[in-house]
Image 1 (cartoon, rainbow, N blue to C red):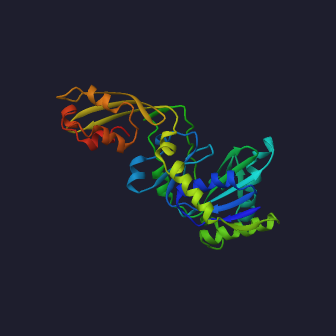
Image 2 (tube, rainbow, N blue to C red):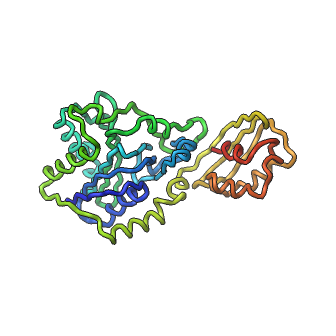
Image 3 (tube, one colour):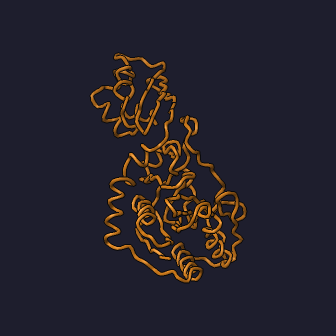
Length: 327
């Protein structure tokens, strides 16, 4: 087994690294890594339905889709992630207990009563500190999980506080749980990097063939190519979302009520209808036509509407207010 040391905290690079290691490195591997503030959404989720978009943009939180299924999670530098990639056969590949066992063993040594509960969670006192997910590729599994060690809980809550009433879709929804930080349960204080070293040392003990491995310059270059072509793109992180219907009522002081009903497929607005008690000079159907077949993203919408004076279509409404109404 290779224990791959990773120091990069860029979430685009780190998610690309997981796929690269899974598909390009034949050895079984174990990795510990951290991300700067980011939201990592499950492969089958509707990204916009999982995040508080305004909070994410205001706080420069990156949003990245991962290979595995499951729900959206918040990462910051107080969260430690662990990843196994291992060869196997058939149903033997799917075994959350196997891949979380080393983590529980470390915590028991530290005097913490941590447990495996439900389908894929680790808990302390009934509160979740680790969610886990898997992706199968050929005869290999990628099993990874979060370890809330000293994460900033208000950021976690705010970043994932999406409005469930805005979206109607068949995407997998995240289930919010009561959560806790590992550091709150330690008898002897330590920081997240010291905790990471304990886990790495335990893996070295548990797998006698384990050796340390550093990704090469060639590895890094190929991973960066994956960031440019996939993990850093709007098409993967937002456009890959399943078909969904977005609806929102915008109530303004000067323009009245405006209701948006938007059908989106592959991240593209296929149809949009706008209703309300607003007054207008120009026919709002022109705005609807301008927005069809446009990305459901603020930048592309602003670009599509640049030839129009939005207050001619919705009296006293600004372009910023209009765009906010579509998210």
